[in-house]
Amino acid sequence: MSTDVRYPIGKFHPQPLTPALIAECIAAIEALPATVAHAVDDLGDAQLDTPYRPDGWTVRQVVHHILDSHVNASIRMRLILTEDKPTIKAYEQTDWANLPDARSAPVGPSLQAIAGLHARWVFLLKALPPEAWDRPFHHPEAGDQTLGWLLQLYAWHGRHHTAHIAGLRTRQGW
Picture 1: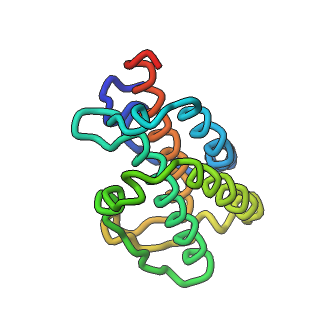
Picture 2: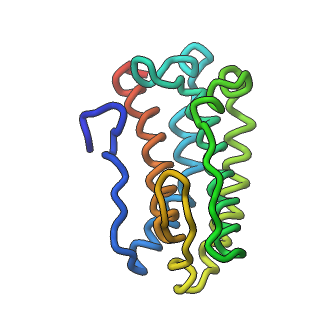
């Protein structure tokens, strides 16, 4: 674990893909809905509107961001699986996190959507043949990558943001 509150589990560092790592990443994606729901369990609006770090997003924004980001990830993976080396679209995540719904909507609908999205997403991931993980794509910011890289990124991403919330709870004694 890192002492940097921006990267409580450390920065993303992809590893050589193995069957065990694929299974570990899929398990992390499968566990995320329950993990993030548990992380925000019993938090009131004042707590949800607390930034996880100075100048950081609020807990509410983090939950909505997880949904926004993982919807994009699921779509990106579907494009990678159905097109020849697609260029995926980047988006301004900070701008999305500052939209009115991300700043003030209840987290319940996003938690429900994360659960539904992840149930379907995991079904797809578990059904993929080993060669699918080598499918290439182009990311405008990260360059040429593979589906296996993206799998690792989003397994990390869920753990990363859940650790933001858990770390805040610990620091605040919630």
